[in-house]
Length: 169
Image (cartoon, rainbow, N blue to C red; front, side, top):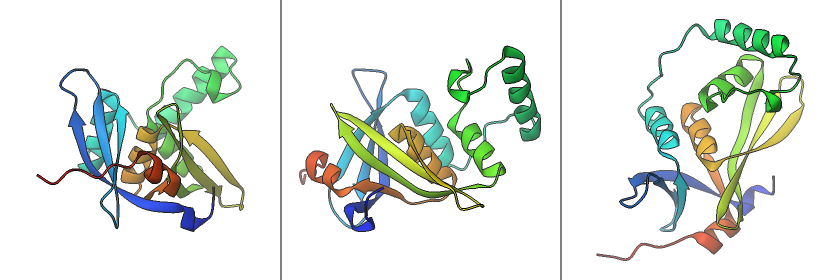
């Protein structure tokens, strides 16, 4: 990712429900400012974000059992890479899987805006010093930040381009 001074720390201000569609709007606010950026997300992502805020864990089987079951299915189906498997694993599962294997989250940021679609990245580091940046959806980045108590950053040029200041009432 870019230099630290190119990023602004953001906080979750609110999640709003659209009156005309099934989507939700997440409002991220710059930590030391008045600007907001609106990010449209699906209702299931909104539910995950709300459960992360409330520190709720969705009941699930033993985590080690899930890992072995997932690897068994991948082996049986002959799949070699996660990107080809037919299962949509939740962000909570994915992050717990990575962290259980000695990976740490270094930085989470909203890094792009292309055709009104936000892009995010998470920088992961292993205990051996290997570091990798992975592109993900902004809703997943927010869930990661909330679940793992990490700050969320937004590229300054995104706030400059898409940031809005609400009107005083």
